[in-house]
Image (tube, rainbow, N blue to C red; front, side, top):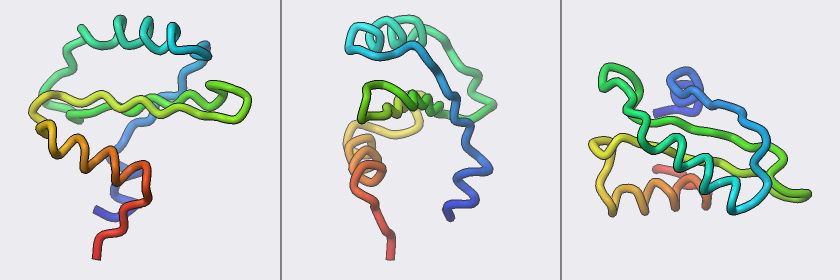
Length: 86
């Protein structure tokens, strides 16, 4: 998948008001029980631009069928370390 394909198939929701670990937990407790339809994207990305003075936050939520535990680790590594497929 190219960067353009990813951008066109991904919905990134900007959220505000999350500035601490407690805020993250409260958001996740609210979002986790929401069952997204299987006919749409099997993941969601939430972006918090001003999590702290020098940090932003990306929250990734996926349906359990999207990937297993090992694939989740690989995906997380790819997103955070700049994965470049050959």
